[in-house]
Image (cartoon, rainbow, N blue to C red; front, side, top):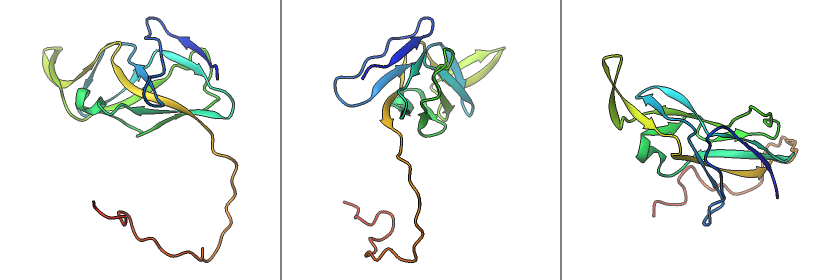
Length: 154
């Protein structure tokens, strides 16, 4: 499957990783995110997704350990209508843990630096959910499995 991609100035080019099914994405500018604040990290590209497909953007497993940030919406979903020339993908983040202290306007501020080219997230594309309709019933007629964590602890 081929997709058209537009890179913004100085962006790191994307490549599919050799192990796994996700594509790493990179910050496209240096930015300081103060602890307990949020920011939008520009990722440096716009992507024309095929009709009927969507992109799922998630942090990499090392993102919190490295920068002390989490993605604010857990998983970002980009649908196939977000395809304009200026529809640059961003990663919304929140800084929970400071990794550095900066002096900004003569005030010490705790936070973390995201540098241009840092591998901060990953995405994959998936087909959108098919059209569904709900049929209301009084009972499924199936045995109960149990509550959350019912498959055991080991």
